[in-house]
Structure formats: structure tokens, C-alpha cells
Picture (cartoon, rainbow, N blue to C red):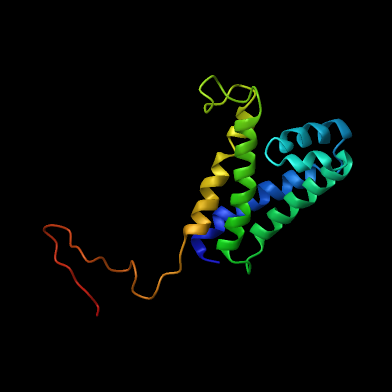
Length: 154
């Protein structure tokens, strides 16, 4: 894991792990509400027993949060998991009636809770697109700043 990925993975991983932890003892009505929203994105979800769905959701969120917090797991792989999760949340936001204003994008007051999770898509993209640099990459620029001499150590 690269140093610049630590803040992204730490904050997002802790947030998702905590959300999953909070869903461990989800009541049946809350689980049913989340299941109905999830079924708009993944229709077969509606075939799962409601209580089982709540537990599966909790475990999945805790597993993703733990994966993001695990330093030996490659950032690209953690980013793919986060991208799938956050993309699903965003799709759920777009497909749930009443979550957006008339334009279908901007959040309604009821949709702000889901719309704010768009930040996770940005973090997922940063983790997936980040690449290892070879020695010498980005330490020197090929162009010089006008009026300044360029010095190379090579």
C-alpha cells in the first residue's frame, strides 16, 4: 500500500466497517426497507429472506471495511470492491423514487443521505487508477519553468 492511499483507505474503511457493525442487529422492518431499495438495483435480492438479507448486508459491509483497512491487500483490489459497493449505492439512489429532484440527478431532501455517498466512487477511482511509479518517474519534469534553470542529477 502506498502512503498516499492510507488516508483514503483508512477513512473509507472505518466508515463502512462501522456502518456494517451497526446493521448487525437490524430489525425486520429496517432490513425490509433496505432490501426493497437494493432490489431496485439487483432484483434477485428480493428472493432472500429479509432477516438473512440484513445479516448478509451487515457482513458484506464489515468485510469491505476490513478489506480497505488491511494493509497487505492491494489498493487496486480494495478500490474495485469499493467501486462495486459505491456504484450500487449510487444506482440505488438514482432508481429509488423520491430521492432526486425532477431532473433525476440532484438530491431531494430525502435523497441527500444516499447522494452524499458519491465521495466513495471518487475514492474507489483514485485507488483503482493509482499506479506504481518506476524510479525516476514524476521526480523530474521534462519541461522547465520559464526563467529557471533545470538541474538534473542524472
